[in-house]
Image (tube, rainbow, N blue to C red):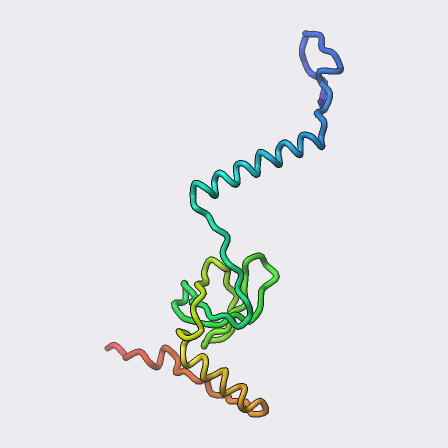
Length: 137
């Protein structure tokens, strides 16, 4: 194929020819698709639904709620607005929640920002977690 075979047996040139590349690629593609579909069927893998900007989500690793701002350029990633700021998370870390169960503090912050567009509040609307915890002696 690419090197001279080191053998005493005679061989013909037709036996060492390269396979037909387009048909080989098509055959391997079909094989990969069968493997993928079989794996997904065995493991009950399902495609997660798309999130739209404004949807409310629960962030699993942070254990808090937020709302979707936009999709990120990476696959299945979203920019999420939380009470602590904006973060990027993969779709597997997000659980879609109904709008009524969103955190009231997040909604009040959005309403406050919409009601006074020229006025910027410099203090955070939430107390920091370190100040809300009791000091242990």
